[in-house]
Image (cartoon, rainbow over all chains, first blue to last red):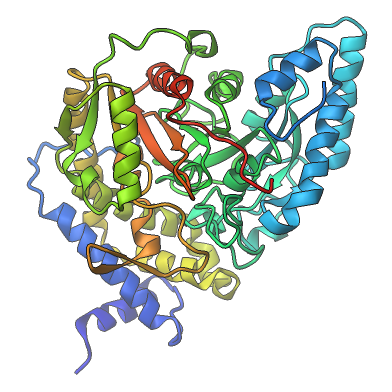
Length: 59
Length: 464
């Protein structure tokens, strides 16, 4: 059975027209796992609906 | 006056302005040291000798004609190769960018350094596209640490750290997105300033993560750091994030008293995952500043995580087309991180940006009761070049992912930091002196006071 994360990598690769050769896949997958783990840490933090993003950042 | 490796920028400028040293002799001394030592250090990717000699001769002609010269007259300096240098393709540590047309105009900060009399002598090695904490580069070879050439310089401003640490130039410019000035400063035993986000113009430098990118100087004394910083300040319409309306010079304020300043040690997250040398360095700085107060920085681990997410996704966005068209021309390690970054779902990036604003508000509260926070710059001294893991408390951890864990939560919200070098044996290590936004003056005054006590210093390494 295909792994869901591998399926996801295939789907996004096609959607973005972004090549992922077989030789790179393990490293791409490992990096994505780290990114998603850290993103989940941020996602777990409750923020109010009114929270504003800081896409244009000023210190 | 004869130039020595340890001669500071301030001493050079004073001697040149006073007619005791020609700018050309100062530049020739730097070029000679580059020729002598850079085969080993590999910090330079371009040496702009003809340009430097012409500029130095022009300064000497001005002095001979009785004209006033700037505060950095005759001071050799070099820049990370993501700064535009007229006539050079801005490679940003990459193979791909070598195909770009040569830059037509210098970066704003080079223009300002040269307007103050400094003389550009070359461009410096760096990690590919600045996505790096090691100073290793598969295209140009690895930067080497002047204190032990089997060790990393730290990155991504690896050549900036190596060239200043090895006393090839007294000042270098670098960039810092997540720690790329502070990490090489720590590993190479020198001072580094990451100013407040928006303070110094990034115009005509190659970007990495627009909302996290900073430029700043590295040097072997606090006065040299301040002289360069003052020379580079000012508004610039060519950088949309440069939000200053004027300049706030600090050099003349360095000797001001720090006795009224409230200093605290960053606790919690910043005291975890550190090697004994980092604990020792923070302890020495805290003792010299007379503080035992520890303040927990809330949610710093999450701040580091959010900085990581924003970095990998904004970086992926920047390079998306290059990843499609020339994936085999990237350093494979950088390529695979960027491809993964392109695959992080958008809502998670939005949440990282929302968290960023929340976290900034928490730190703003803390800075109502303290003026300075101190924290490790790196968890350890420079690892060996190519080292993949280190063992901490019996746990094996990846080197690359852990070098910047203490710098990322600070640059995430743009706070100004001076990295100060504690000259431990056999390898130095840095400590971050962190101030509230726009208070570089405080961080630099504290760094200067520490330098006067001798607790922090940047002696030229043995053999250089």
